[in-house]
Amino acid sequence: MKFQLLPSTIDENGQASARQHLACFVVDDRIAFDAGSLAMSCSEGQRASLRDIVLTHAHLDHIAGLPLFIDDLYSTLTEPVRVHATDEVINVLERDIFNWSVYPRFSELKNNHGPVMIYKPFKLGVDFPVGHLQVRAAPVNHQVPAAGFLITDMETTVAMSGDTSEMEEFWNMVNARGSLSALLIECAFPNELQDLADLSHHLTPRALEVELEKFEKTDCPIFIVNIKPSYRDTVVAQINELRLKNVNVMRIGQVYDW
Ligand SMILES: [Zn+2]
Image (spheres, rainbow, N blue to C red):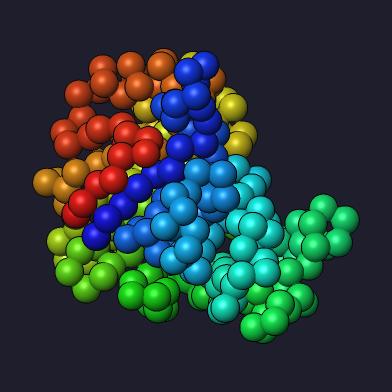
């Protein structure tokens, strides 16, 4: 399974920077988990082959690239872009994004080949197919309805938390599954902003350490994602100070092969 966190910013030299404003993870160049930087940072190969997008929640940093991705492809699509999300997230997208004021309601539009975007609602706690993958979602603990995922191609299985604070059901789902190749978990704010992390339902390094004590697969590689760019250096330093086993910060743009 090829897994890539797409870049979302460029540095002063025009190169992808390590700052992660937006969340978008592409699996096997074909399926996106969240769409924050999808339209802006995907390769042309990914743009040509990627037609399934699975959403953790509807916050802007996770969906910003979705309307633009469909816009780019609008006239050339020979099949619709499939947006997999819970009913709650779909309702937010229809009400607040694809509402003809912010952007066109693509779910009502067709090109010469047919619909350009369709919704594929999923339920929490039940496996659902997405292209060549099978996905299961569990509720996580964020400011809005949000899900974490178990993603498998039947050989490799990866877990990702999405945005969250302390969790229970996600860990139950992950611990109940066989071997895992990787766990992706967020850590948005530094320890000194614990109040802000509590308010916005995110993790700090100290809270991350508590969460990882619930993770029973002690040999599984763990990758930290969704660090707020303004605090990245501090958060990374605080994570490193904890000397947690198997924990690394995910490299933006790198293709991991699991
Ligand atoms: Zn969020």
